[in-house]
Length: 537
Image 1 (cartoon, helix red, strand yellow):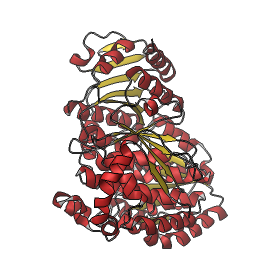
Image 2 (cartoon, rainbow, N blue to C red):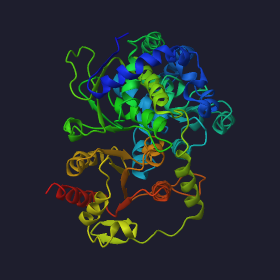
Image 3 (cartoon, one colour):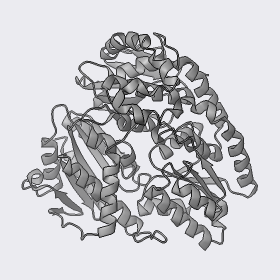
Image 4 (cartoon, rainbow, N blue to C red):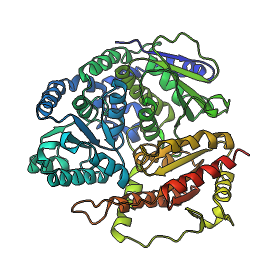
């Protein structure tokens, strides 16, 4: 196993010195690995008692290795060597990190954008199998992907059941329907593990292993890390990291992630969901902010910002400023961050295992899909961009520049801007380039999320965390739409309802929301970039 390393300086070091002795004295680490549900208070005890299986996932998941290997070999013998994963949140983010780090191909379909779904269908269908992953067994995004792939296989003369693998909790609707349909394989995961803690269960391992990752080595790393992390010791790296995340005083609740050559591809995106969804509730929490090399947040010196640097295992520099520096292999860091998040929850006084505000956006989406209301007319049209927002927000704005200015004027001194783009995250990945521009223009942290992916991640924090965010929602028309077989709505209608529903819930929580709909994707993106660049001046 690679050695885990957590170094702290500044406010992070002060938090470690303040909290780690008490955590050790209370036996927090050993109690956590003994699955003690009382660690987060009486209000959290009932939920915690059902959600602590993750601490032994590396051991419990061992029998999966041979099963996954055998299935991969069966597929290979049939000429099937391309895998698509239909999953959301914890069901998709962990496999994405694992496969990208290993350098193996996995198409992660965590979008309802018709163009991204179409791209997944169009590539080498004859060599493709799909893994449909849903803990509840009723996730609308994954079920819709299952339906459209099953139809595509049938239309191509391929036995659909032989190409569909399901990962779900035992007893879920998907388990029973998948078995009835005779799907190739149904894997049931440990129901005592929540989605964002499920990286080392069937949800993380099945798609990764089928794609070609050595998941046994991943479990070895995690298992060995667990031996260190369970110790009630002053040098336990998870206690240090958790104290830094949740124990600074005053709380530095914007966690800016920088990857300085860790070798773990996209790790911050996985950690973003784990931390935001676990801590963002009851009006508090810590917000991960995933940034690139040129991020102004990392050097801003803001009193509410803590910088986390993901570094190579052989990094020798000592951090300076309010910084946490973390190194280690992928398997060991998956365990490290899960334990540290549990520690942070304890220090923040919240239950890290529930997500009370995630369901609100889902309910709003369902209602919109059932009622199918007429689209709300745009408040303002600026070329290819339709602008919508509350009257008190827009207040006479006539252009995209005006509207952005009005939104940013609502940004508190301790606030953040959340940019949410509801369209193809692969074809339009360059749009994320507006994030650092907005960060420089505002002098505040800016997050960028692809919808509906972020709804299963930072979406909880947006509603349940501190009321200090402002929200820029970007949607886009598509020249093509895709029907969802045996469904009363299409993919285009679904993603539109998801955007509308989330905006509605944010507004109901009193959050300022500016909505920009790009009537033409290419022209709209160009106009948006132009407006964002104007903020530099």
